[in-house]
Image (cartoon, rainbow, N blue to C red; front, side):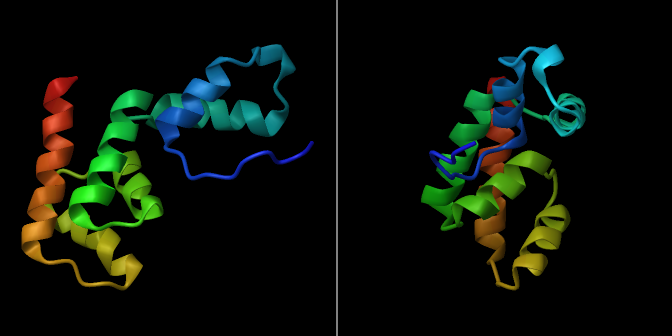
Length: 110
């Protein structure tokens, strides 16, 4: 198999890709992955892409960081801080609040 493109995508986007594959044609890892994304996808693929884009543009996050946030959809500053601690970078409380606003706005839109 040849790699055509490499990009970071959310769990919801993985789910959409795997839904377009017949279950019988999936190998064991694809089936496990499909089971996982069905259990843990928290948004639609379009909503997750929208959140990622907005987090990158308005909160100065890397795309990988925005995907990590979108996959988890944290609900508090404390939860957000647990991610930023792992990134080893300081994010101001104002920015964390903005991140929560983006996440919560998109939750309300669904």
